[in-house]
Length: 203
Ligand code: GAR
Image 1: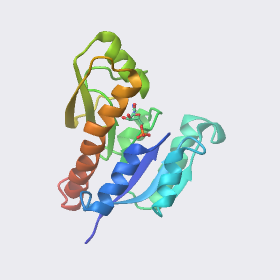
Image 2 (image 1 turned 30 degrees about the horizontal axis):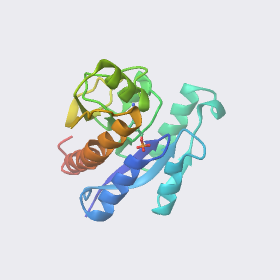
Image 3 (image 1 turned 45 degrees about the vertical axis):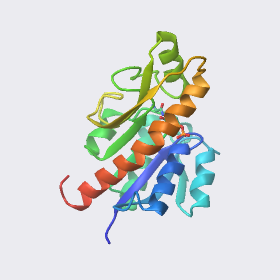
């Protein structure tokens, strides 16, 4: 069966990448194949997860490539040369330029650890998102998978899942629950949905 070729972009621990890898081996992700993992951080643990699963890896750092433009040029070349059709941002802590996102309309998806439009946009990433949710005092938070366009966290929503905040939560405990109860579930499902649509020529 022909599958959508996926590149996963990471920056850190890669638990969402792991969820995608497990989804592919477990059959939840069946219309797409993870063909490449790109990190913008050298030595990110996500790279070890990819290597462990036999997936090709690449590290591209802005500082080695003369900044954002050089980084995106190298990224574009790496993706094109491998025939990548879908980009999944899984804990990728860098914003892609409008120039780049316009080349991949509805071909980039991202997982964000809050219910967009809450706690999103520039500056809201990783643990900061959960710090902000706790500081505001919300009782429900969650995760969102959305298409990536030129507006940070502003593209069309594909999936969301709510998670309750519990008394005594710390940013770390909330982050863990949001990952376990939301991100690791909705990201692989959304990757499957979009991969399937690409294979069926619907996109
Ligand atoms: C995840 O919670 C992801 O949603 C978030 O960073 C964490 C990465 O964890 N991403 C963002 O905040 C992007 N704006 P992981 O490396 O273990 O998947």
